[in-house]
Length: 88
Image (cartoon, rainbow, N blue to C red; front, side):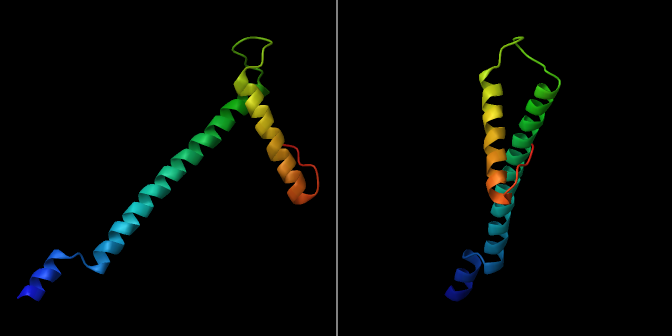
């Protein structure tokens, strides 16, 4: 009888696996949202640069400078990886 009570109280391996998979799913969804927002921000900044939309005309904000620096870093990384200049 004590053995039956212990089995009822302790979760089975299958339920532990389901809980783990649920946690992994939540983490992957959070990563997906973060990556999506990151690329969406890049899209907005690229559109801002392409169409020359400025909050203050003739003045590059810190976000513009940061975006240009990140673009340069990514370009240099591709240049080192592939051995040729890649225009982003």
